Amino acid sequence: MPRAAAPQWRQRKEPVLDDYVLASVEQAGGFGKHHPDTGHYAEMVIRGLPSREEAQEYVRALNRAAMWLHRNRGAEIGMSAKIEHTAGDWRVRFHAIDKTLARAHVLAKYGPDRSKWPYDPRRRNT
Image (cartoon, rainbow, N blue to C red):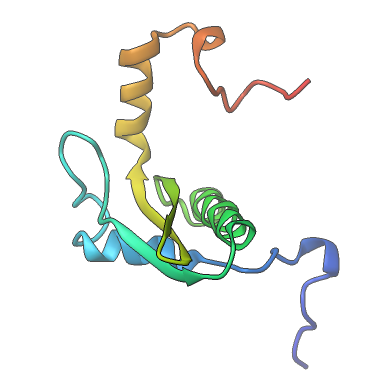
């Protein structure tokens, strides 16, 4: 007998953009084939978005997808995404980032004291 869909509280919020995140990695040649200095994989663009709100939702969805891939698939990647406005439409320019080099960059720039980091994933939002 087939299983039912995941309960509502466990379903992922739409849009699910795992394929977009993985496309950035694939375009660069696969995992581990990132830029040696920055850790960036290939840059990609989502075009033709009708509003800034829609573009912001795509940025949030890209970040959710990267986090989900990291937690559930063991992909050592993060995400960088920027919104652009050109000639009546909105775009999201993004690329996946290798987490190992991203961590090294944060340590080199801000030092080992987590209280001085702009974002600490272990700090609670209080």
